[in-house]
Image (cartoon, rainbow, N blue to C red; front, side, top):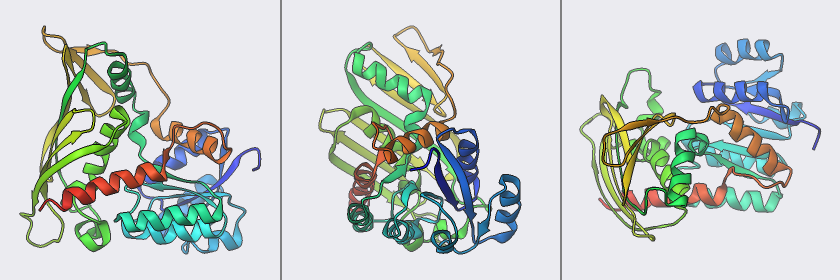
Amino acid sequence: MALKLKIAVIGTGIIGGNHLRAIAKSESAELCALCDVNEAVVAPLAEKYEVPYFTNYKEIVEKTDAEAVILNLPHWLHCEVTEFFLNHGLHVLVEKPMANTVAECDRMILAAERSGKKLAVGHVQRYYGALRKVKEIYQSKELGELCMYTEMRSGDFFAPERPKWFLDKALSGGGMVMNIGAHVLDKLFYVLECEPMQVFATYDNVKNDCSIESHGQIHIRFENKVSANITLNGCGNCGSENVFYFSEGAIKIAGGKRMSKNVGNGWEEVPLETKDDPFFQQLEEFCKLVKDEPSEIVTADYGRRVIKTIERIYDCK
């Protein structure tokens, strides 16, 4: 590998923009190309970052010296495009969710094994300061044993600006459970480091013009006996709240950046250390993975675990 890992970013929407800013700050990676089917979006970005752009991802392997790609694509393309780049000798960081099904995850993992290249998944929330602090409290038993977790997420999943493929289960893999649930499961897997033992769920669709679920409620009991109740509502923008309940207090986090603690005397905000932006931290860990150094990046096996649990949730109906 060159001094800096040469990365092409495929998909230049909102999340792609976060990756571009991370690469611009990095001394471990450099941007070598951009790709997006929307030329009106990708052309000015390419001019800004002074790199070539393409509207067909296959041209990346033919016309650039990219060593790795970051994929920010509709979910139904994750498997196909990941396999393509791995088979052509490039490392891949694919945004969450890893794929629409476990079977697709298995295909991606097999392609990585056959190629000898690295495959990682962009579950970025483990780099949020509040979640890292929760894990520290959990492991130190500062507040005793963790008993249970609750999360309520409510946002307008059907806002007019959302791309229509999100509302087609065949393309997106699902609605609130797939898209928002994947974030919640990642938080729990990261903190608890154990497997779900029992999964119960109900979900439905009150938006009759689409094939995804508009809302759902999930109960999970983990192997360490911690339980989690998760309420996902895509029908209204009513905010969110998530709380870790310990035997000697509770921790509430908001947006990954704010934390409050309650030990029986009301909620008090907990100051957090200022860290670099999560996408920058994730990029640095991806570069370590490529160099075979110890890394905190989400592995493909971990990404598969998230999708397997989502499939268990959907099987509950």
